[in-house]
Length: 91
Image 1 (cartoon, one colour):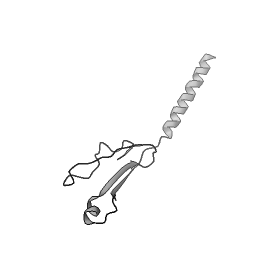
Image 2: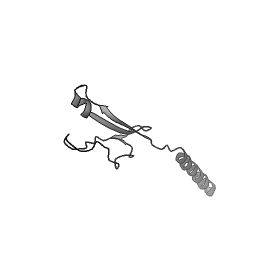
Image 3: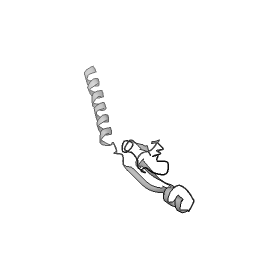
Image 4: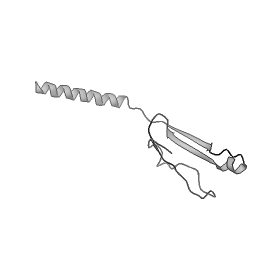
């Protein structure tokens, strides 16, 4: 009798773990570029006051990271480092 109960429990756990694997959803990401964050309309604001947002499109309750690229507003690239991407967080 104990063997049948153990076998039944094993079968149930096997089924549950298998079905959760089948229905696991792959995370997709959205990258929105050059979003203006100022109401100012002067040439500098239009050209420089922009940000990019990279986030998991089909997830909820994810971590948010503010990434400042550096460059002192005089140089550098506006890019999101690849090692921060695809980690279930908003950048």
